[in-house]
Image (cartoon, rainbow, N blue to C red; front, side, top):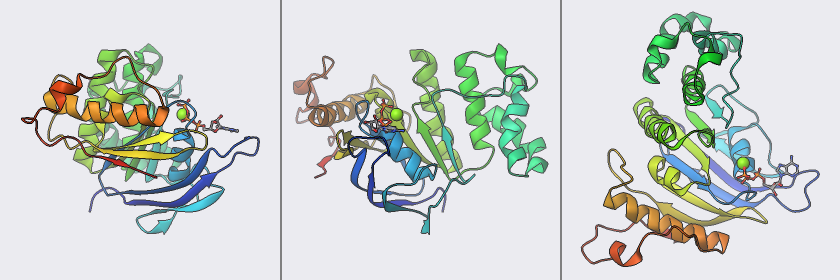
Length: 276
Ligand SMILES: Nc1ncnc2c1ncn2[C@@H]1O[C@H](COP(=O)(O)OP(=O)(O)OP(=O)(O)O)[C@@H](O)[C@H]1O
Ligand SMILES: [Mg+2]
């Protein structure tokens, strides 16, 4: 079996200085190798939930199990990527990628694993370069290689692509999904970008704020490569827009034309399930 199974039960969280509950009564199950997007407006608790699932922080209430084992702290088998790549500026690309191996006493693996991971993220010829000379997108690729080199079971992504231009971002969305599928990694992605969720996830969980909780689940059953111009993509996106609007209590300017998307000739529409 590839990738880890995650089960969270009754997760509630109140920050010490927080006025309200950041999360309230979250139940969640993620299958091995599945790609999940946690989506919702700013402040609805996405990062809080991600940190709790990864073991970086402890919930006020509730439990998280990964492959049946209670999560009590971080582990190298669960890696997190943040918005800033946080590379060491005085090290080369390959040294940055090897950092996790070094911290975990696994430097013996570096000689073969580091070049392999650099090839995977398409930076094979950049090994000796200084990371400061790389573009933002290339730096995120280095951060991705640094995460993957540990051979993680779960990759947690907290909007790591949001500072990138649209083209670079799209390429990385596609590559991360492909690499996670190839390596059998469970992917948990936080985003407030609907396109990103449809590009990368098998299933999106839409969150509501104050207190943070789930309001809907949208299945995104698109086989193979995902093209934003495809009909399947438009259908999944329309379903997610509707669920997102419902959770946020607003109407977005950019909604897909409903007539065209619900005609009788359409393939099965993306499934939406309300979560109470
Ligand atoms: N360290 C903290 N202390 C007190 N309150 C916090 C802390 N971190 C987050 N919060 C509050 O908890 C709630 C959820 O925050 P969180 O960062 O999880 O939201 P988010 O969905 O990730 O938002 P964004 O999309 O802006 O990153 C917010 O109301 C926030 O103000
Ligand atoms: Mg956040």
